Length: 115
Length: 113
Picture 1: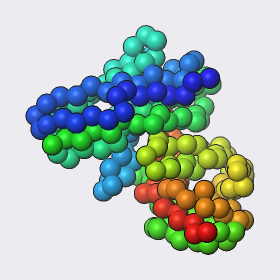
Picture 2 (picture 1 turned 180 degrees about the horizontal axis):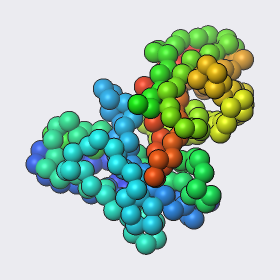
Picture 3 (picture 1 turned 120 degrees about the vertical axis):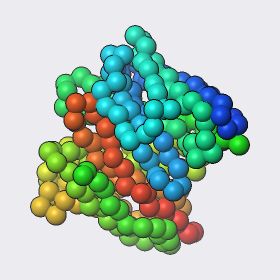
Picture 4 (picture 1 turned 180 degrees about the vertical axis):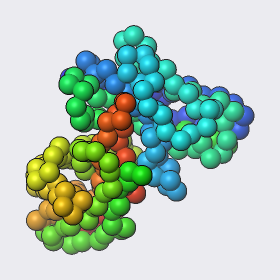
């Protein structure tokens, strides 16, 4: 079974631009979450989607948004990029079969550099 | 709030040495506990997990036991290899409406031949 895939793997943007990152979960997984990883702040939760609805949200400004499609694929968007948005953005998927505790499986990440 | 604290690195060991990386957590409810590993330039890989008190997770020679009384989930390996060099993250999984994972800061491990 294929793992979580993320595109693109690397991205360079300039301040003020916007960016869209894509994530395809493991087949059959219905929950998709996004995380930001930086050397200073570590791994921080952005948001989680299930059945095209955002169920959970971290403490990030409104410039960070996401969505999920009917096939469970997800995109996240960052508008008006700032230098501090440079990070590795990780997507994770989980089965969400029983409503209990889930294991999240991570993709390789998209490394975003804002100049 | 919910949080994970793990020992600061880097940790430098010689091959075949014993490894312990300490991890403690604060959480409401009944979280699952995880150890993830990140190799250079890669995403996170699940190393092991435990879903309830006294459960022991194990994989590739690594072990960790869910200790509710001490709110700990320490990672151990009896004999490390150079290939174990990576960053290790302790994490807890919470269900509050949706589901999210809260990570520790990570511990970098260097293993010398």
